[in-house]
Image 1 (cartoon, helix red, strand yellow):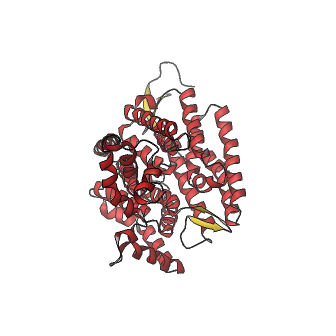
Image 2: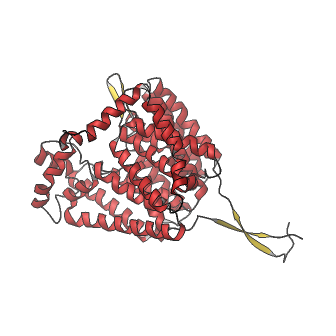
Image 3: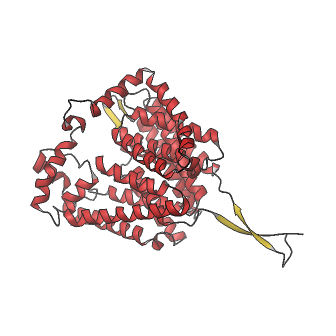
Length: 444
């Protein structure tokens, strides 16, 4: 024990991955994905969600919201893939319970960030009005999934070891999902089991793009892999293969946008940064030399080959963009009302599909008012990310904001993995938790 009155110094404590949480994650995700790989997605979903609920209940009973959010955030890719075989909105409910647990136990974090608090309030109001107008509670309910996921990542930002554990968990879950679905179909991320099907390529492509970016930016700092080259290289190569095999053009675009920010920010280190991408390039060349390479090339040509129309390139999204001027002109200020998206789409395009872009959905349902509020949110996130980059040299919060804006071009982005990107964007205004400082007494 140090003597009373002994001099002291301030000593930094290095963050480290929480291996116990990663072990809990493996206990839930790996058996579930093994069952999926054997063609039993229903049993895989039961194992995943019931085991996760048991572990999360323990963290809740021990009043440990940090471990709760880190564990479930890491499991998000697997949970999103299997949610159709359990209770679809369970992902939203679990995330909401984690944020509420944090507020009850710790009572801090969200209230200190006015932009995040306003975003959460607007998300709840948007869903509530949608429910009132349609009399269906699930209408736009997933906006709460996006909001709760973003809030969870922001809260974990105060505990960088737990945030890094959650992000590494996303990488491990993504690879496990990719391995399980590899035998099914030529697009990794979706599969057919008899008369049922699961997944969507972008559901796997987005977390893979996220892991690729985090493994490259700052030498893998956000994954706490800067001093673990084997872990960093393995995650980069495996996630890169999953991203490529997903054939998700939206995910490819997100990865390119994020890597562009990383390269622009890496002044004087671009050669080293390019060298760090060699494992990714090697993995990509290996994949392209297999039978899968031909399938990837076909999907690439569908997007970029000359002679194809925009409607063919965008797989139905083009019709929605063409109809937008007429839809907006009918109600430019207030829109057609929260929850009216599918009905409005059917009336103007003849399709009852959901809107393939968050920008379009808000223009249709909330008009210029909602759209301008979204632009204000994005402007604030970009400003915070640029300030964070200027002060710390770290481009990840700016990447998170820009990548979410890119996601919103081709899909609604109202899901948990998009919320992780958005949560990283909100961390641009937060500098606490980057270092943990402890006062240590010196003994003679």
